[in-house]
Length: 305
Image (tube, one colour):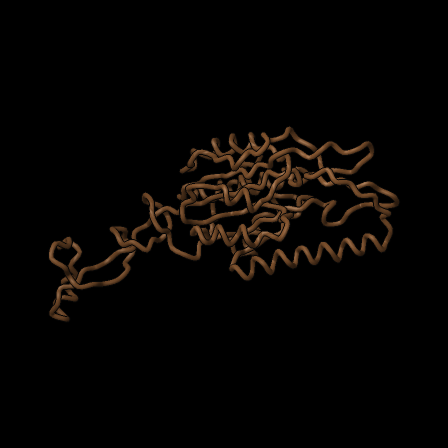
């Protein structure tokens, strides 16, 4: 779904990581371990059995002690993309899917190992009544379905497999984002990108705390639709929850729209503050704007690249 021109722009970028990579095969990120790459790290005194080829003879002559050169080993990092698959994501799914694809491409071309986890919803919401406004519906996920994992992907050649997996992801149904995060098993320590609209009872803080506890350096990408950011409503309307099917009749006058904007601002402020307290970069993705024109500046401004 991403153009060749946009992918070429991504080729010049790399995902940002505060910590060092913690393990894996050779890659492009600096590790806490020491090895045999060309980048010098530090000295330490020689211990019998060490590789004598790493002895610094100049330091030995100067200090009358045998010192060993240490080098920073380049290792790959684990990158996990968590993609919210609940029914509320349907209206902005194209933007969310493209975000997952772009982040995944950056991981693959950056020498990291990538896994995408689709946090699919559970039971679908009841169908809306006639004339109700609701998000577009997609085929429902199996009742009680848990997270669905992509294969472990590595290297630019795995980009096709990434897009194939994303093609199978269809947002539908309801369920707690936090509970779906808790169901994930086998997370490798590394970067974690959570792509969600943030609609979660009690907020997304618990989900982020759980991910950080499991060694994830988190970032949040929050796609919202033009209707959510600025609803074009007038007169008497019926609104239907895309996940639960609950409906509410509303007179969309000036007072109601102003009240909605205040609630939206409070919601977005809470998301930002939740992320700030957890040192988690966050970016609001307007699904109504041109993705390929706005996404890279969005990642840069938030510190994700």
